[in-house]
Length: 507
Image 1 (spheres, helix red, strand yellow):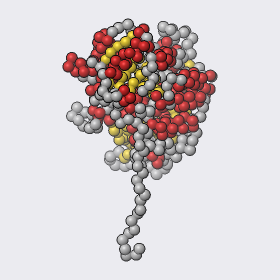
Image 2 (tube, helix red, strand yellow):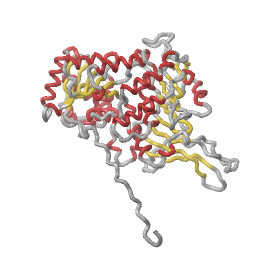
Image 3 (cartoon, one colour):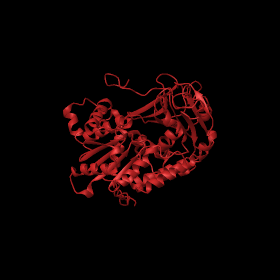
Image 4 (tube, one colour):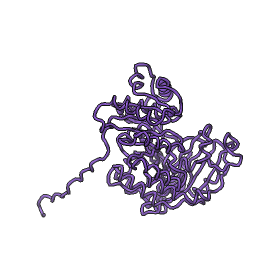
């Protein structure tokens, strides 16, 4: 229209967000904590429940503890208080403890299913509202071999209705055992009632991957094989296996950490955009990633065992159990074809860390003069730190101040604990317990996903490469460098994370 106003762009109606199937607030609940006097309960669950209660997220809740210990409610309350004093936040005096302590009761497993049903009914009577609004959350903090016994106990006690069940890893040890486990579970509970927990996905940093990818037009267009060279998911640990050797002899690092933790993080990193941030669409996209994975090739795997592991109590002198594993994974779809993804985890390594590192492809550097240091410090990296103090870092080349064209590696960093809302952060177990109470499966694993991962692992489990000895305090067997070549492992970092100085500035 010559000389007139520019025509207005017509835009279609904004798509309305889908109606959520997740409860916005948890309804009145009885939490039945199996394994209530165990180590996980002491270190994570009881302190986490106290924090949820004090944050106002456990309104109208009662907690029934049960385990093999022949103790009473008074003893359990004392145990819970000591756990919260040791592993919780702040000082716990009588005034602070009393409101939470009043929520607790205890029943030994020897009392039987009917006594448990009666105790849950008694706790429910103290909750407000009609019976149909009251929910039960059964948390199975028990060894894997005891999980199905608890499931059948709940069935005999009539505690399946209006309930959800939280299952700890591992979810089977191979495809056949996972299929059998899920089949037996489904005889009692529907899939929608089952919450297979992975505390890695409960961390703020893991969820920040979704926000970072899908809420920013800067990164989603380059999140593919055209711009990303390789990916590393690295979870080394300095701790050994003291007190856990019997458990590890039946699992090993691959079953304990890779299938249940690292692969789940990989799915968040690699998934396609879901149609909405609802549990079902997110689970669908995660499962597509697992289905697109190539079967794990034993030649792309390095297994290790730290010196001194053999000969320990309940460990054979010729044990073939891996305490370390590194492997290459390939996703054979349009977005990721040809991009290697390296996973590494192990015990008694040089340091403890939990990172995802995205290495971007390097540009042509012919324009920079000799001696500029261009490209000499590796590719640009985007790094997610999945530790409790979650952080992100983007490294890049910049010009060093002064004459000439000298480049150096710089970084932009973000830390959750530096934000104004850092006090609202929930620990991983706290978030996952609260999500399960609301019926939110977003951060939990499905039966299909677990079975697919075990299927992709069949060749490795049937013909594993030999374990190689490594010294405690190192980064694992030397063969890991051939696995990742011509690239290099991101850990140890060539530079440290930014830390605040005492005056509040960046050190």
